[in-house]
Image (spheres, rainbow, N blue to C red):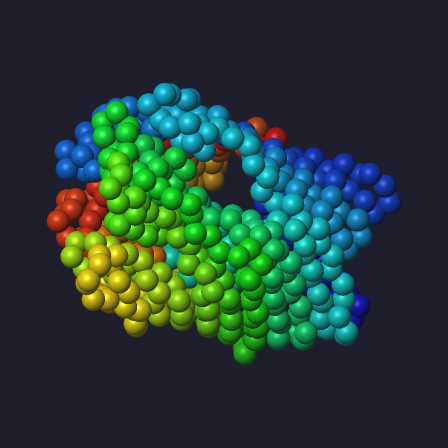
Length: 508
């Protein structure tokens, strides 16, 4: 009986090594106990802007001004390839992607924007793993290489998991996008050990550091001219000449000082508690301005993109279930995380102590009066800046300041609802995804959806052809509220960028 139990646990962790390829298109047997699973996914994606650019927003954002009403904001082909080589209890996982987007193959975009938004190839996962039985009840899963490690229970507003690797921040602009869909792999060693049926421990150490991907200046979702690939100046003339604040070298952290440990304990059959400690370097770009740089020259001033380092995080989680609902909670405390302070109309980043609490639920209603299957995911997130370090704003003779540029708190909610109709037509399944998010109060750098009052919605319809697996979806995404650019904590910089998107996906 024990042997069966141990083998089941080992197989469970092995299967999780490549969950996205569990239904791979082909399995090739290479020898005794050696197999290669692989699959590919080809996607065509297009989007069109629905609103005219707001005059106020377009004046401060080249990305807004570059796209007129009914312009295409994307028109590209995307290819994802995944493979999983297995031998015994060990294996190698490799995945990569490439794409080409015609919209950004245009000289009105910088060469960096053309590359990073118009098409490039990148390696995603590349890691080896092994799993083995530990004692009578446990197992160990060890992975080395480029992989995603994500702890915590957050669904829409990441905290613990966001500290564990880079992410694609551009995807987060779409309402209903979950944390798991924005996280990117990092080079690291990770280990998870189930010591007993109820108790597991985990750890990871990273030997590389990559920044979070943000929109390049001039692209559709860009709201800043100072960060992203191709950013070079705080204020530029119409011909592109920098008039003030050329970009200096980025201030990046050490690549090998990031690590974390954690433990989870199951206190009942359905309830689990977790504790975590991380030492990490932030991946969100912060603009640090030096107005005294290049004095007497043209252009004067300057800035650096800074990534804060040596941040500590202590976190706790809880997960349980009741009836059709799975409930999760996450609390984290960060010391040394970035916040923005201001004085004399200048803004600078500074270190802060930040508390974040998330509460969420996933509810499977099953068959209802409106759908054959109904699934709801909902989360609320509260962030409190407990303290911020006073610093000089960069103007000689002025005192240090700890006045926050935004607010000292943030409260936001997000939800998604999926209505499913399998077999609605012969050989066709249909689903209707709905999503909504709202920044109810305050604003901080992370843990919300924009300025206070910012609310966003997505309404879609998707069809899947079962014989071929081809999936076609059409989505409307809306960003609501006035820009309110006069008050920083109420800024809604995407409020004029409603769009519709078409996606056709084929897995082979």
